[in-house]
Length: 149
Length: 149
DNA sequence: AGGAAAATGAAATTCATTTTCAATTAGTTC
DNA sequence: GAACTAATTGAAAATGAATTTCATTTTCCT
Ligand SMILES: [Mn+2]
Ligand SMILES: [Mn+2]
Ligand SMILES: [Zn+2]
Ligand SMILES: [Zn+2]
Image (tube, rainbow over all chains, first blue to last red; front, side, top):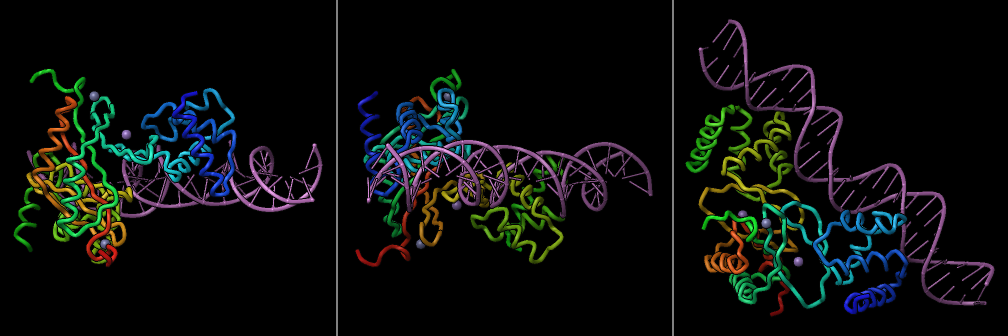
Protein backbone atom coordinates (compact mmCIF):
# COMPACT_ATOMS: atom_id res chain seq x y z
CA UNK A 1 0.00 0.00 0.00
CA UNK A 2 1.08 3.51 -0.86
CA UNK A 3 3.00 5.41 1.82
CA UNK A 4 0.79 8.50 1.40
CA UNK A 5 -2.36 6.46 1.67
CA UNK A 6 -1.45 4.58 4.80
CA UNK A 7 -0.32 7.78 6.44
CA UNK A 8 -3.68 9.34 5.76
CA UNK A 9 -5.51 6.27 6.91
CA UNK A 10 -3.58 6.64 10.14
CA UNK A 11 -4.76 10.22 10.41
CA UNK A 12 -8.31 9.04 9.98
CA UNK A 13 -7.88 6.48 12.74
CA UNK A 14 -6.53 9.20 15.03
CA UNK A 15 -9.45 11.45 14.22
CA UNK A 16 -11.94 8.70 14.96
CA UNK A 17 -10.33 7.77 18.25
CA UNK A 18 -10.20 11.38 19.37
CA UNK A 19 -13.90 11.77 18.74
CA UNK A 20 -14.90 8.47 20.28
CA UNK A 21 -15.82 6.98 16.93
CA UNK A 22 -14.86 3.52 15.84
CA UNK A 23 -12.48 2.22 13.24
CA UNK A 24 -14.19 -0.33 11.09
CA UNK A 25 -13.35 -2.65 8.28
CA UNK A 26 -15.69 -0.70 5.99
CA UNK A 27 -14.20 2.67 6.78
CA UNK A 28 -10.76 1.30 6.16
CA UNK A 29 -11.67 -0.12 2.78
CA UNK A 30 -13.59 2.95 1.69
CA UNK A 31 -10.93 5.42 2.81
CA UNK A 32 -8.24 3.30 1.18
CA UNK A 33 -9.98 3.15 -2.17
CA UNK A 34 -10.88 6.83 -2.04
CA UNK A 35 -7.39 8.01 -1.17
CA UNK A 36 -5.80 5.74 -3.70
CA UNK A 37 -7.89 6.80 -6.67
CA UNK A 38 -7.70 10.48 -5.81
CA UNK A 39 -10.11 11.93 -8.30
CA UNK A 40 -13.20 14.09 -8.09
CA UNK A 41 -15.66 11.33 -7.41
CA UNK A 42 -19.26 11.32 -6.33
CA UNK A 43 -20.34 9.01 -3.52
CA UNK A 44 -22.18 6.98 -6.12
CA UNK A 45 -19.10 6.56 -8.29
CA UNK A 46 -16.91 5.52 -5.40
CA UNK A 47 -19.60 3.12 -4.24
CA UNK A 48 -19.69 1.46 -7.64
CA UNK A 49 -15.91 1.07 -7.65
CA UNK A 50 -15.88 -0.44 -4.21
CA UNK A 51 -18.82 -2.73 -4.66
CA UNK A 52 -17.02 -4.48 -7.48
CA UNK A 53 -14.73 -6.04 -4.90
CA UNK A 54 -16.88 -5.62 -1.80
CA UNK A 55 -20.48 -6.30 -2.58
CA UNK A 56 -21.35 -6.27 1.12
CA UNK A 57 -20.52 -2.58 1.58
CA UNK A 58 -23.55 -0.35 1.15
CA UNK A 59 -23.89 2.99 -0.53
CA UNK A 60 -24.90 4.66 2.71
CA UNK A 61 -21.66 3.71 4.37
CA UNK A 62 -19.62 5.04 1.48
CA UNK A 63 -21.63 8.24 1.65
CA UNK A 64 -21.13 8.56 5.39
CA UNK A 65 -17.46 7.78 5.23
CA UNK A 66 -16.92 10.52 2.68
CA UNK A 67 -18.69 12.95 4.99
CA UNK A 68 -16.47 11.75 7.79
CA UNK A 69 -13.34 12.21 5.70
CA UNK A 70 -14.48 15.74 4.95
CA UNK A 71 -15.00 16.51 8.60
CA UNK A 72 -11.61 15.10 9.45
CA UNK A 73 -9.97 17.35 6.88
CA UNK A 74 -8.78 14.52 4.66
CA UNK A 75 -11.26 15.27 1.91
CA UNK A 76 -13.21 18.19 0.53
CA UNK A 77 -16.58 18.38 -1.04
CA UNK A 78 -16.80 20.08 -4.39
CA UNK A 79 -19.88 20.94 -6.37
CA UNK A 80 -19.26 21.86 -9.98
CA UNK A 81 -21.75 22.94 -12.61
CA UNK A 82 -23.44 19.55 -12.81
CA UNK A 83 -24.59 20.03 -9.24
CA UNK A 84 -23.29 16.70 -8.01
CA UNK A 85 -21.32 16.56 -4.79
CA UNK A 86 -17.84 15.30 -5.51
CA UNK A 87 -15.07 14.45 -3.11
CA UNK A 88 -11.36 14.72 -3.43
CA UNK A 89 -8.52 13.89 -1.07
CA UNK A 90 -6.95 16.95 0.49
CA UNK A 91 -4.01 17.54 2.75
CA UNK A 92 -4.62 20.29 5.24
CA UNK A 93 -2.46 22.93 3.55
CA UNK A 94 -2.93 22.61 -0.16
CA UNK A 95 -5.55 24.57 -1.96
CA UNK A 96 -6.32 24.61 -5.63
CA UNK A 97 -8.97 25.68 -8.09
CA UNK A 98 -10.34 24.01 -11.18
CA UNK A 99 -10.61 24.25 -14.92
CA UNK A 100 -13.51 22.17 -16.18
CA UNK A 101 -14.06 21.13 -19.77
CA UNK A 102 -17.61 21.61 -20.97
CA UNK A 103 -17.27 18.88 -23.56
CA UNK A 104 -15.28 16.01 -22.09
CA UNK A 105 -15.75 16.89 -18.42
CA UNK A 106 -12.05 16.69 -17.65
CA UNK A 107 -10.99 18.54 -14.55
CA UNK A 108 -7.63 20.28 -14.38
CA UNK A 109 -6.32 21.68 -11.12
CA UNK A 110 -4.38 24.87 -10.72
CA UNK A 111 -2.90 26.99 -8.02
CA UNK A 112 -2.20 30.66 -8.43
CA UNK A 113 -0.89 32.86 -5.63
CA UNK A 114 -1.65 36.05 -7.56
CA UNK A 115 -5.26 35.03 -7.82
CA UNK A 116 -5.43 34.32 -4.11
CA UNK A 117 -3.92 37.68 -3.26
CA UNK A 118 -6.22 39.49 -5.61
CA UNK A 119 -9.20 37.82 -4.03
CA UNK A 120 -8.11 38.86 -0.59
CA UNK A 121 -7.61 42.40 -1.79
CA UNK A 122 -11.05 42.59 -3.38
CA UNK A 123 -12.69 41.23 -0.25
CA UNK A 124 -10.92 43.78 1.92
CA UNK A 125 -12.15 46.58 -0.29
CA UNK A 126 -15.65 45.61 0.76
CA UNK A 127 -14.79 45.06 4.39
CA UNK A 128 -15.17 41.32 3.95
CA UNK A 129 -13.23 38.80 5.91
CA UNK A 130 -12.75 35.94 3.46
CA UNK A 131 -12.90 32.40 4.75
CA UNK A 132 -13.17 30.34 1.59
CA UNK A 133 -13.74 30.85 -2.06
CA UNK A 134 -14.90 29.04 -5.10
CA UNK A 135 -13.19 29.61 -8.40
CA UNK A 136 -13.98 27.50 -11.42
CA UNK A 137 -13.16 28.16 -15.04
CA UNK A 138 -15.42 26.47 -17.57
CA UNK A 139 -14.45 26.10 -21.18
CA UNK A 140 -12.83 23.74 -23.62
CA UNK A 141 -9.67 21.86 -22.89
CA UNK A 142 -6.78 21.48 -25.31
CA UNK A 143 -8.27 18.28 -26.69
CA UNK A 144 -11.75 19.65 -27.10
CA UNK A 145 -11.26 23.19 -28.31
CA UNK A 146 -11.85 23.83 -31.98
CA UNK A 147 -8.74 22.99 -33.99
CA UNK A 148 -8.82 26.38 -35.77
CA UNK A 149 -6.80 29.15 -34.10
CA UNK B 1 -43.31 51.40 -14.32
CA UNK B 2 -39.56 51.73 -14.39
CA UNK B 3 -37.96 52.65 -17.73
CA UNK B 4 -35.39 49.85 -17.40
CA UNK B 5 -38.02 47.29 -16.59
CA UNK B 6 -40.33 48.06 -19.47
CA UNK B 7 -37.42 48.07 -21.85
CA UNK B 8 -36.46 44.60 -20.71
CA UNK B 9 -40.02 43.41 -20.87
CA UNK B 10 -39.99 44.57 -24.46
CA UNK B 11 -36.85 42.53 -25.07
CA UNK B 12 -38.61 39.51 -23.67
CA UNK B 13 -41.58 40.05 -25.96
CA UNK B 14 -39.22 40.28 -28.92
CA UNK B 15 -37.47 37.09 -27.89
CA UNK B 16 -40.77 35.25 -27.55
CA UNK B 17 -42.05 36.42 -30.90
CA UNK B 18 -38.84 35.48 -32.64
CA UNK B 19 -39.05 31.96 -31.28
CA UNK B 20 -42.73 31.50 -31.96
CA UNK B 21 -43.60 31.60 -28.27
CA UNK B 22 -46.47 33.53 -26.84
CA UNK B 23 -46.69 36.60 -24.66
CA UNK B 24 -49.01 35.99 -21.78
CA UNK B 25 -50.43 37.86 -18.85
CA UNK B 26 -48.52 35.57 -16.46
CA UNK B 27 -45.17 36.01 -18.16
CA UNK B 28 -45.65 39.73 -18.09
CA UNK B 29 -46.45 39.81 -14.40
CA UNK B 30 -43.66 37.43 -13.46
CA UNK B 31 -41.03 39.16 -15.57
CA UNK B 32 -42.14 42.53 -14.23
CA UNK B 33 -41.89 41.52 -10.61
CA UNK B 34 -38.59 39.74 -11.17
CA UNK B 35 -36.94 42.62 -13.00
CA UNK B 36 -38.24 45.15 -10.53
CA UNK B 37 -36.98 43.44 -7.41
CA UNK B 38 -33.64 42.60 -8.93
CA UNK B 39 -32.18 40.37 -6.26
CA UNK B 40 -30.80 36.85 -6.16
CA UNK B 41 -34.07 35.04 -5.77
CA UNK B 42 -35.06 31.42 -5.98
CA UNK B 43 -38.10 30.45 -8.03
CA UNK B 44 -39.84 29.65 -4.76
CA UNK B 45 -39.12 33.08 -3.31
CA UNK B 46 -40.32 34.89 -6.38
CA UNK B 47 -43.41 32.71 -6.47
CA UNK B 48 -44.25 33.64 -2.88
CA UNK B 49 -43.86 37.32 -3.66
CA UNK B 50 -46.04 37.12 -6.70
CA UNK B 51 -48.73 34.95 -5.21
CA UNK B 52 -49.41 37.60 -2.60
CA UNK B 53 -51.00 39.70 -5.30
CA UNK B 54 -51.73 36.99 -7.88
CA UNK B 55 -52.93 33.88 -6.22
CA UNK B 56 -53.90 32.37 -9.55
CA UNK B 57 -50.30 32.18 -10.84
CA UNK B 58 -48.70 28.83 -10.14
CA UNK B 59 -45.21 27.99 -9.04
CA UNK B 60 -44.56 26.05 -12.22
CA UNK B 61 -45.17 29.07 -14.38
CA UNK B 62 -42.84 31.18 -12.28
CA UNK B 63 -40.22 28.47 -12.56
CA UNK B 64 -40.65 28.20 -16.30
CA UNK B 65 -40.62 31.93 -16.83
CA UNK B 66 -37.33 32.23 -14.99
CA UNK B 67 -35.87 29.55 -17.24
CA UNK B 68 -37.19 31.46 -20.20
CA UNK B 69 -35.67 34.70 -18.99
CA UNK B 70 -32.36 32.91 -18.64
CA UNK B 71 -32.54 31.56 -22.15
CA UNK B 72 -33.38 35.00 -23.47
CA UNK B 73 -30.33 36.47 -21.75
CA UNK B 74 -32.31 38.71 -19.41
CA UNK B 75 -31.49 36.65 -16.35
CA UNK B 76 -28.80 34.31 -15.12
CA UNK B 77 -28.96 31.33 -12.89
CA UNK B 78 -26.64 31.31 -9.91
CA UNK B 79 -26.00 28.51 -7.50
CA UNK B 80 -24.19 29.52 -4.33
CA UNK B 81 -23.08 27.37 -1.44
CA UNK B 82 -26.61 26.61 -0.29
CA UNK B 83 -27.16 24.77 -3.55
CA UNK B 84 -30.37 26.54 -4.44
CA UNK B 85 -30.81 27.90 -7.93
CA UNK B 86 -31.17 31.65 -7.79
CA UNK B 87 -31.94 34.08 -10.56
CA UNK B 88 -30.86 37.63 -11.14
CA UNK B 89 -31.61 40.11 -13.88
CA UNK B 90 -28.70 40.60 -16.25
CA UNK B 91 -28.08 42.78 -19.22
CA UNK B 92 -26.13 41.07 -21.95
CA UNK B 93 -22.81 42.81 -21.31
CA UNK B 94 -22.38 43.13 -17.59
CA UNK B 95 -20.67 40.47 -15.61
CA UNK B 96 -19.96 40.39 -11.93
CA UNK B 97 -18.92 38.05 -9.18
CA UNK B 98 -20.07 37.73 -5.59
CA UNK B 99 -19.05 38.10 -2.00
CA UNK B 100 -21.34 36.08 0.23
CA UNK B 101 -21.61 36.47 3.98
CA UNK B 102 -21.61 33.19 5.86
CA UNK B 103 -23.54 34.67 8.77
CA UNK B 104 -26.21 37.01 7.39
CA UNK B 105 -26.29 35.67 3.85
CA UNK B 106 -25.90 39.09 2.30
CA UNK B 107 -24.64 39.08 -1.26
CA UNK B 108 -22.32 41.81 -2.50
CA UNK B 109 -21.47 42.11 -6.15
CA UNK B 110 -18.14 43.11 -7.56
CA UNK B 111 -16.44 43.49 -10.87
CA UNK B 112 -12.71 43.30 -11.31
CA UNK B 113 -11.00 43.49 -14.70
CA UNK B 114 -7.67 42.32 -13.26
CA UNK B 115 -9.32 39.19 -11.99
CA UNK B 116 -10.89 38.53 -15.36
CA UNK B 117 -7.60 38.97 -17.14
CA UNK B 118 -5.80 36.75 -14.69
CA UNK B 119 -8.38 34.05 -15.20
CA UNK B 120 -7.97 34.20 -18.93
CA UNK B 121 -4.22 34.00 -18.55
CA UNK B 122 -4.36 30.99 -16.28
CA UNK B 123 -6.73 29.19 -18.61
CA UNK B 124 -4.45 29.83 -21.57
CA UNK B 125 -1.53 28.36 -19.70
CA UNK B 126 -3.41 25.09 -19.70
CA UNK B 127 -4.59 25.38 -23.28
CA UNK B 128 -8.12 26.04 -22.10
CA UNK B 129 -10.57 28.17 -23.96
CA UNK B 130 -12.62 29.79 -21.21
CA UNK B 131 -16.32 30.28 -21.77
CA UNK B 132 -17.60 31.13 -18.30
CA UNK B 133 -16.39 31.11 -14.78
CA UNK B 134 -17.64 31.01 -11.27
CA UNK B 135 -15.98 33.10 -8.62
CA UNK B 136 -17.46 33.44 -5.19
CA UNK B 137 -15.83 34.70 -2.01
CA UNK B 138 -17.30 33.44 1.23
CA UNK B 139 -16.64 35.11 4.52
CA UNK B 140 -17.98 37.69 6.91
CA UNK B 141 -19.30 41.04 5.82
CA UNK B 142 -18.52 44.32 7.54
CA UNK B 143 -21.56 43.98 9.76
CA UNK B 144 -20.89 40.39 10.71
CA UNK B 145 -17.14 40.21 11.14
CA UNK B 146 -15.83 40.19 14.67
CA UNK B 147 -15.56 43.76 16.00
CA UNK B 148 -11.94 43.17 17.10
CA UNK B 149 -9.34 44.04 14.45
C1' DA C 1 -64.95 33.59 -35.25
C1' DG C 2 -62.25 29.29 -35.93
C1' DG C 3 -58.33 26.48 -35.49
C1' DA C 4 -53.57 25.17 -34.36
C1' DA C 5 -50.07 25.49 -31.28
C1' DA C 6 -48.37 27.02 -27.02
C1' DA C 7 -49.07 27.98 -22.08
C1' DT C 8 -50.88 27.07 -17.68
C1' DG C 9 -51.14 24.97 -13.10
C1' DA C 10 -51.93 21.01 -10.21
C1' DA C 11 -50.13 16.91 -9.50
C1' DA C 12 -46.82 13.47 -10.29
C1' DT C 13 -42.03 12.25 -11.08
C1' DT C 14 -37.17 12.36 -10.70
C1' DC C 15 -33.00 12.01 -8.49
C1' DA C 16 -29.32 13.11 -5.34
C1' DT C 17 -28.98 13.48 -0.67
C1' DT C 18 -30.12 12.51 3.96
C1' DT C 19 -32.50 10.09 7.72
C1' DT C 20 -34.51 6.11 10.08
C1' DC C 21 -34.28 1.86 12.36
C1' DA C 22 -33.42 -2.87 13.51
C1' DA C 23 -29.52 -5.76 13.46
C1' DT C 24 -24.55 -6.03 13.88
C1' DT C 25 -19.97 -4.79 15.39
C1' DA C 26 -16.12 -2.44 17.89
C1' DG C 27 -13.92 -1.26 21.91
C1' DT C 28 -13.92 -1.23 26.84
C1' DT C 29 -14.26 -3.49 31.38
C1' DC C 30 -14.16 -7.31 34.14
C1' DG D 1 -12.46 -14.37 26.56
C1' DA D 2 -17.39 -12.97 27.95
C1' DA D 3 -20.39 -9.18 28.84
C1' DC D 4 -21.73 -4.65 28.10
C1' DT D 5 -22.44 -0.23 25.88
C1' DA D 6 -22.35 2.77 22.32
C1' DA D 7 -21.38 3.34 17.59
C1' DT D 8 -21.94 1.48 12.93
C1' DT D 9 -24.07 -0.67 9.20
C1' DG D 10 -27.10 -1.19 5.22
C1' DA D 11 -31.72 -1.51 3.40
C1' DA D 12 -35.40 1.10 2.98
C1' DA D 13 -37.84 5.24 3.52
C1' DA D 14 -37.97 10.23 3.55
C1' DT D 15 -36.74 14.63 1.90
C1' DG D 16 -36.78 18.44 -1.10
C1' DA D 17 -35.57 21.04 -5.09
C1' DA D 18 -35.99 20.63 -9.88
C1' DT D 19 -38.45 18.97 -13.71
C1' DT D 20 -42.13 16.68 -16.37
C1' DT D 21 -46.85 15.31 -17.42
C1' DC D 22 -51.32 16.14 -18.92
C1' DA D 23 -55.94 17.93 -19.24
C1' DT D 24 -57.62 22.45 -19.79
C1' DT D 25 -57.20 27.18 -21.17
C1' DT D 26 -55.26 30.93 -23.73
C1' DT D 27 -52.86 33.22 -27.41
C1' DC D 28 -52.15 34.33 -32.01
C1' DC D 29 -52.95 33.54 -36.80
C1' DT D 30 -56.06 33.67 -40.76
MN1 LIG E 1 -9.32 19.21 -7.24
MN1 LIG F 1 -25.35 39.17 -8.72
ZN1 LIG G 1 -12.29 18.44 -22.92
ZN1 LIG H 1 -23.09 39.40 7.09
